Every structure is written in structure tokens, then in C-alpha cells.
Image (cartoon, rainbow, N blue to C red):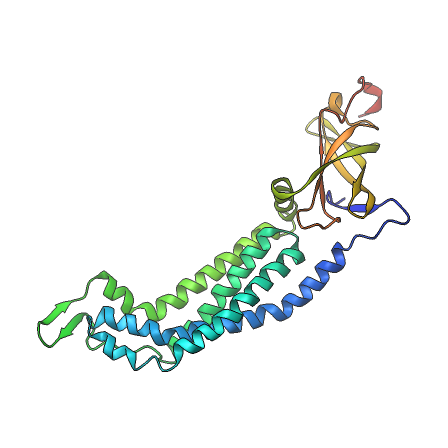
Length: 290
């Protein structure tokens, strides 16, 4: 059984809104992600108009400023006009991702990946569309008064920035997506969620109502299915979780546990931990037949 599954126990208790909230968030992401990606792509494409100016200054020496000013051509206006809504939509992606996947890590990684991916697309289109101005000479500064001099490392980096920037932002987007997948795949989601609940959640007491030996022994210790009652935001609820403990520390009915609330306020996700108050009994070997 999923260790984070809970269910209401009071007939008139308000149902857990978590699943419906997550479904709505997932649907909204279907719209938000492509729109946000497109806005960041537009901003990145427009940014080339003034990035090109600094690139020419680094490759043509200081008088490259004059070579690049003509390429601005309203680009900064488009850039700032796109960055503002892109940032707002980025926050929306972060918020909805956090709700959809019930972890803070999801919001941070997906929002960052979408922004980086959009920037990579816009810069790639600018490179393929020859939006960057070629320097006067490759490998040398050209100056009418002082002759020529060789480029340094920064000038070479600036020269290759037209294709390096899409690669860098594309790599950032790929890393963000890989981090998201690794922390939210089926085998790791529970660990990610548990770590966040312990770090950001709200702890409250719970009472053990039922303990059932599952007839399973793991590493020489018995496994129990424990039913816990606690008071949540919308009334009394139960959580069912399995624990493997030494027989002498087996949980007992009436014992106390710590229940950690989902930091996102989703009652469908809690973490239950046994404490020294969870067991208070004498050991009876007959309770755990092998």
C-alpha cells in the first residue's frame, strides 16, 4: 500500500481536495508550459539585438559599438515586453507544478527548465537565421590607428557565443528535466515527498487505532500495517502505513505517533513516524509466528 495514502473516517468530514486540485494543476500546465516557453523564446530572440553589440565590442575592439548599434532596431523594447509576461507565466508554472506534483522541487526544476528551454529555442532560431553580425576580421582586432592585434580568450568566446548560448541554455533545460524525472519517478517520489514534509511540514500527534502483523519478516524483523487517527484541517482522518520494527519495539494500539502534514496543505499526503511512545508492552513471541 502507498505509505502516503489517507482516508476520511468521519461521515460528515469534508473530502480531501488534493486529487482534484492536482488534476486541475496538470491541465493548466498543458497550457502554461508552451506559452511560457514561447515567451522566453521571443525574449531570447530579441536579446540578440543588444547582445550582438557587446559581441562586436569584444571582437572589433571598442569601436565595435558603432557596428552594433544599428542592429538594435527595437530589439530591447521587444525583449523587455516579452520578459515581463514570461516571468509572470514562469511563476505560474512553478506554482502549478508544485500543486500538480505535490513537491517544492517540482516547481523549481520545471519552471527553470521551461525558462532555459525557451531561451535555447529563441537563441537557436537567431543563430540559424543569421541574426548575429560577423566581426570585421576573425582572430584579430582591426583598428585604423594601432594596426591589428590577436584576440584573447574572451574574444573567442564572444565570437562563438552565437552557437554556445543555445547549447548552454539547452543543457540547463535538459539537466532540469533530468533532475525532475529522477526525483519524481515512481521509485523516488515517496522519498522526495517524505524529505520535503519533514523539512517544511507541520507535525501533529496521532493515535494508533489498529496494528496488524502482515506475516512478513524483513531482515529478521516483523512488518506491521498500522492504522493511525489524527485530526486534520477538514476533520478526523486515518492514515495506513506499514512499518518494519524489531519485535520488542512493535507498535501497539493506543500508542502515539508523529504525523507530518503535507507542506502544500494537501491532506491526501502525510508522513507517519513511530516514536518511543508508539509501543509500551511486554513481548509475546506467539504474536509473530514464523
